Structures are given as C-alpha cells and as structure tokens.
Image (cartoon, rainbow, N blue to C red; front, side, top):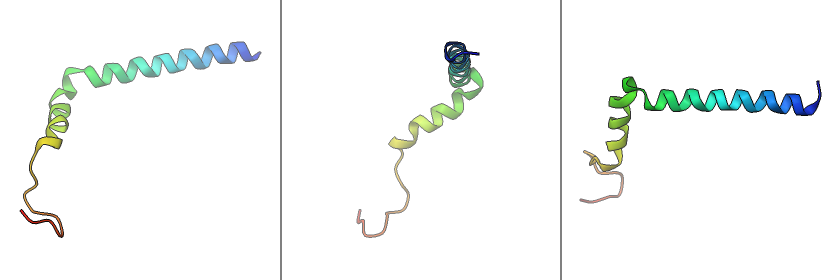
Length: 54
C-alpha cells in the first residue's frame, strides 16, 4: 500500500461520515429537537444571574 491508496481510503471514509452527519442533521426525526435548540437563544431566563438586576 502506498500513500496515495491510503489517502484515497481516508477520503472515502470522510465523505461517508460527512454524508452520514448531513443525513442525521436533516432527518425528520430530529426536527423537533433542533427546533427547540434553535429557540434557546431567544428564551428569557426566569431568574436573574448573580449581580444582575432586572
């Protein structure tokens, strides 16, 4: 095995992993969880932090 063959195998592995992550991120089963996570920055905190006054 030369370095070109190993480089090709690693490239194929990374492409498969990338496609897997994209499929997982855009699957319909994860949509509610990602929608909830996307709204987190816009939600108000119930209690003020130490030193903060509202």
